[in-house]
Image (cartoon, rainbow over all chains, first blue to last red):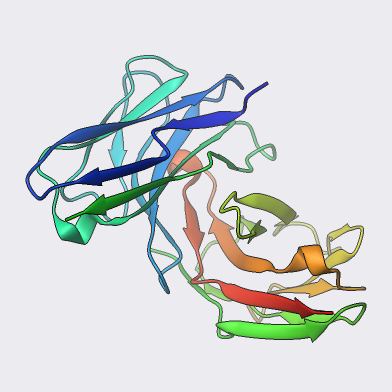
Length: 114
Length: 115
């Protein structure tokens, strides 16, 4: 099992460019999440999904969009990148069943917006 | 939103010694879950230990144990016999069941194990 994978691992964008980050999980998890990690701020939730075709806003959703067309995939989009979106992005997934609710994380994507 | 506070940005410990990392949280919920995650320089987030709030017994996983004080809303992590591989960032996280089982993370404690 690959667990949670993220594509790409690194990316450099210019201000105003767009891009999509892909997250895939092979654990048949219902829930998936996108976080950003900035120095001194821990991980902050951007968007999450509780199932195929559903999405919801997290703590810092502005400037991002997401889609979950297939259960195993969760896409994070930046339509017009800004320097403030320079960060490390993590995808995670978890089962909906309690108490088996730990989140499994991907390796992260380092995004730099110039 | 729930808040999770880790008041120690950096800590160090001698190899083979014991260290305790602090975490407090703020919630009005009675049923919730608490986690400690480790993030080594590789950047991968790794689950260290978890605690269900309805369980009074403190969780243990080999050299890692927690001191869960529900009334004080405190959840500290104790690492015994520290090893060089324990050098990492440690994040405390709170989860309230339902509404997507969202996690709320603290800002982290950077732990360095000194040979």
